[in-house]
Length: 529
Ligand code: CLF
Ligand code: SF4
Image (cartoon, rainbow, N blue to C red; front, side, top):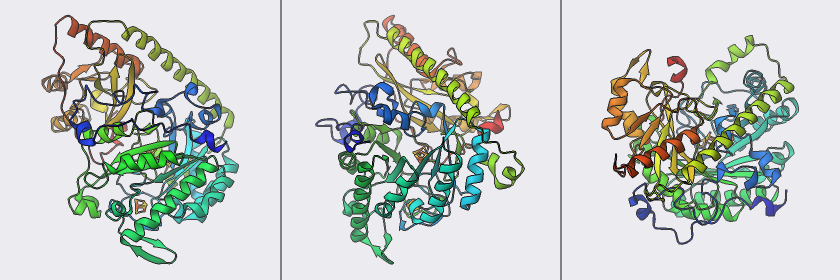
């Protein structure tokens, strides 16, 4: 791929965008992803399809759950924890927990040797045919452990040729490893870039380990910044797709991330993933222990929106563990512990995997067509404000459908719906409401808090008690679109909502802010199901 091709993706920042404070104060009906559009293609660029990018790039992203929002409903990834060491210190990281580069706090249950990792990948691939991507994302830095990382990648490139290889790094060692990355066809590289100004960087990174010694302060941040930019430019020149992860730290780098977006776009980054800081005292991080808070849902969305406007912005990141397995948002790693793998019959059957993925593509096409039909229906003039946008929460366990009971949801997907679009704009983790057949009343306020900016919640089923409480909070529980495709369901509900406004049955009101749940337990759904 040419260098020029790599630059097609992150679009222009919204021209003359508002100050962040203005964006945050804008009611959600007037702000949001689509509002910043209108100057080109939809701002949530990862929802792009084959018509939005060159064929060779579509081939690389179409079944990568992180690089394509649409793919994440259908395809899974896994991480192998072969890289324990790190060459820098971030103020949001406590290695006892995990790598915030690419994960939520939570211990890695088992660190693996490359041999164990390869065996685990083949075991997962034989059981989960929709697992299409293997990533190395810690628990330290993949490139601070180059031998373990590349030994794993080399064997997998031979033994599992249909699996895409992916890695994540803080970028310090990246320029030295670009040749190795290309040698094993690692087509997707994530660099965590939280600043382009070393003064800002000094508030995030207390030290780096560089050329056999520890470097601190602004000098450390300057070296890290230069290595990150150089590594990004080198990958772009070699045609490797890059994703930039940025941790949004209120008061430290929030407005600065707009500058980061501009700089990484200039250097050919494919995607920018702005994630909320996860920071609780019990995580033992410097930020957590010193009272640094994470952003609210509206603060996060405001920064993402300010960076949008044609950009490929990732909004579906789940801040995975470094040993996660499954669809984004689910974690099946417990099914694949080393002792369980020992007892498994591992049959890596390429034909079987391909046949399954062909079926997924048929389903995916049906989802695209359902959305197209629903958009046509939503376009009719109904006399209501044509620019109205609302958020809806959706309970789903995959396949792009509204197919989960309210009480079984450990996260809700958030879609911004207007007459012209139904866009994925994020997810909210929640405490599980249903605990073994009965509702956990204490969990309900936290669920309501997590989706408090939404007008409706679309579910497969919901009990009377949570239904009443949601209504009382001004959130409409909707189960009439059970098992329909999400975008179609959201657009159909929205069309009906507008019709009720047009008939004078209800008055549209702006919703409030929502809270971002920190490190919710995501494995509980299976237990409850
Ligand atoms: Fe893993 Fe990262 Fe590759 Fe994805 S995760 S190394 S790009 S395969 Fe994905 Fe997880 Fe977010 Fe990372 S949702 S934390 S962006
Ligand atoms: Fe932790 Fe990752 Fe930062 Fe290293 S790069 S300190 S492992 S968050």
